[in-house]
Length: 234
Image (cartoon, rainbow, N blue to C red; front, top):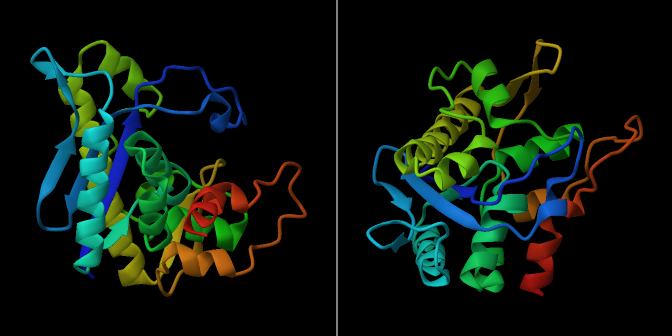
């Protein structure tokens, strides 16, 4: 499997309340992104202003990133992102002012988090899965800190962080394929596992039934992740 993971960081600063929907603060602005080919090219994507990284990607730079993902996907690479369908690819498309292209890439992408959500009815964080899958590489900061650090001028730290998350995603995908299951650390600290014999593209998961959510007080609607993409692809 030729694998290419992508991740973005936003520049928007806000304090997210417990169980609060992050989309309340949308639209989001991308400060920096990264792509990592498994065993190959790694790139960090940002714009410059006055000789240093700018607050946000320009639409042109965001579109260059989108075109790169499209070219790589067309050449046989499996574009992958943790929650990429519901977040990363959506906002790259928004920033690049090309939602239709982003939607096509997203629907053909691999999103282990979305697949996990469909099997369990709830989402899971990258770090929780990495820990349970035995990934030794650590996340370099909390995602909520990245916009603050970027605005403070700690550009390299955020670049290392976003690239590191791509590398961790690649390692998780490999581990899932090898073990044919996904493991994660629960909020109570236990390790649980679900069979995941095959990673599937997002468009295939969209057509499959979601796990039972009737036991939840506030279940997340499945279409929250993909509605933007299916509408754009119509």
